[in-house]
Length: 254
Length: 311
Image (cartoon, rainbow over all chains, first blue to last red; front, side, top):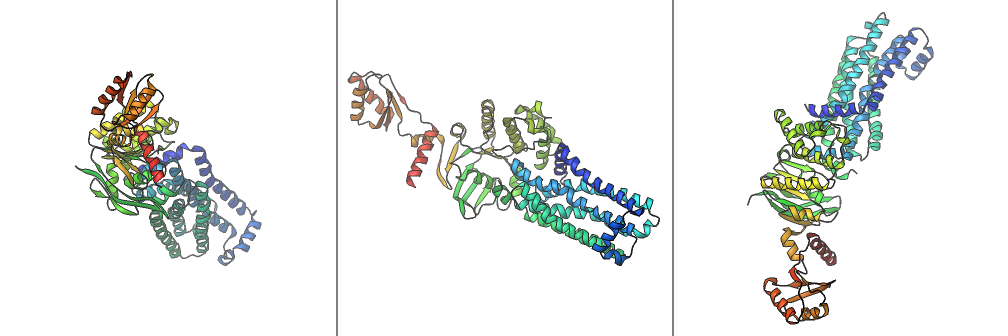
């Protein structure tokens, strides 16, 4: 475990407090929106939104659930964007900034392996976002169980576990893809744009599949989904190590 | 003689651009070896291959008995590399930077603190150990970058334009250290545009331009490339002296430089007294006659001019 890479990245992150606070605030904004919308829905003030949701997502009708539950569940799923998006901003610029400032060359001449270096970077950015997502998931879960009478019948243990377990895998997939992008482009702006372009649709697709599956009640589907995400996260990490082309980065980037 | 670095027909191309066209060099242990060459001649590419940062297109490199194509990790543990721009983390303190690189070089935790303190004191950075590296001057950052590269006490050190940002006092100190390192058996390969540095420090150097165009020592190179090797001052007797110099068989070539003559004499030890005799016999006052010292820079520029003409 390359803890020294993780600690170094964290020290740099904490030294850049304004960017850090801005990014950490975003998940809590989503949480506040989720709490307000669910309270409004419980008080029958979200009919328009519910109608719109049913129009755009016929599955809601198929599921035949209570609209308020659907909204709460939707936000629960929306939280999965946090581990995908928050670390992306830092990760994509991280490798390129290291190249520009010359630190990458200094690090790559040391005996540190590509695997150690990338794993350290990915964990440094994913661990805080995973913890943050779990915090907002738990707060929201607490709210749901406190305010819904039959919460456990709508939010099964398997569903909750799946949502929690998906967080690290989604984060690792997103970060591994961003490393691939960072390895192939030659400036920060391009890395962030390409990163968002590549990662967002993939994560979006994954989340939409989760939303689709969330309408199903079979717990095996959730477990299957978590397993698939775990395997994909391992594969994307291996790909990112394979595609991290030291020579291209050292000699081509300006 | 034990050779620490062996390069055999080293070639490197980026796309269709050939940067190295076959470099072969053997560098003995304890040597300070210089790499000279104009911009784009392949100095940095050579150092990057030796530092295991990039792969050669063909050819073989052996460092400390390890083939670079097979044992990169082993080699990386035994080499240090300092690049022209200081590769340190600006947001981290000096100590944090060093802790990080010490971990990268797998230095045991128990040894880190004493090694870091020793080097920080040696490079006059101990007082600034808690400052963020970004607040250091360029020269101090360069020192920090050097410390990062030698933390693990490497056997081979690559220095790429390493004195670029240092003040004269620090340059002098670094030169002394480089000599000390070499005396203790370490091998140093340095590229520099500052020819006096190569002249003062290097035991041997190569001028490269995609390939090795000269492999020599600073002393030999100066001798080889000095057109004029004797300087003669005759005060005011310039015209009479020039006539004698022109006719003297000891003088192969000459040129007038203000009130002096620069002469090319094949065997100055025996020829100089004869020439002086002739001048004195003609009532010329010889103020002095002395060997003309040619700088490495003059010699290097002469060689590059010749190369240009050849093209």
